[in-house]
Image 1 (cartoon, rainbow, N blue to C red):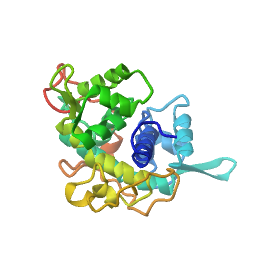
Image 2 (tube, helix red, strand yellow; image 1 turned 135 degrees about the vertical axis):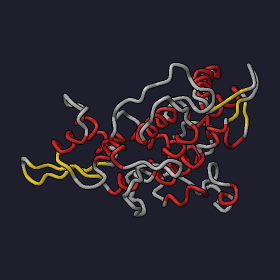
Image 3 (cartoon, rainbow, N blue to C red; image 1 turned 30 degrees about the vertical axis):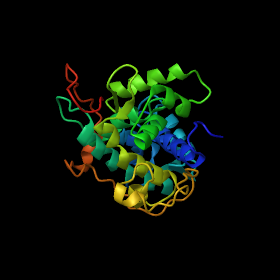
Image 4 (cartoon, rainbow, N blue to C red; image 1 turned 180 degrees about the vertical axis):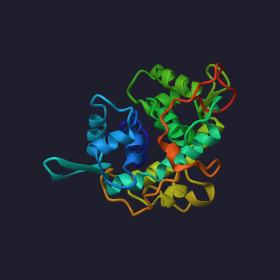
Length: 282
């Protein structure tokens, strides 16, 4: 059943990307996946790697990641249980550096250093805003659109002024802009920069090799996406097997490499007293 007035294949694509984002955005989920990237771990070994998760906070995250098909549980004996990344979870890891690279380029720069994993988490919060994905999809396709048009496509059947809260949020986040009240909305440079992120997420959700990201019909690069057959880019169930990919997650980005241990740094970076000018908001 369609959730937007987008064409069925596009609506399915947006829905699957939204679901993929929903799997990993909840707090600490990314860090749980990273903790399991090298080898299966017992519960106590996981808590040693994630010491700030106490009082039963880890169990719900493992359960949710298991329901999403990203983490598996193996009972070796009554008192010996290990957790591991599934094939689907392993193929998700290379998506994270793509998100981190976007954050390095477009997120506002705080006063202190920010770990790679913090960049990923801050980016995911922006991308999972209510109605964010379909709004960004429409604006990428049309270049600009009125609030009324966006409402008709993104929330068909609803009262059209309900589009304004998510639009204001995306403007505050620095992903969308408008020249004034009643004027069309368009993507900012940060919003356009999400092309590789959304293309990669779509490829992963469809069980495709991540090399297909550049061929995405909306978010792909102009020289490659014209080769994609129209109407064939449909995301499928997230539990379908994906092509094998390297399980290694590079800790840093191409702009600023960082050592692997920093991925597990959970100290909250200091925020500046004033929001810096330019860049998507954290």
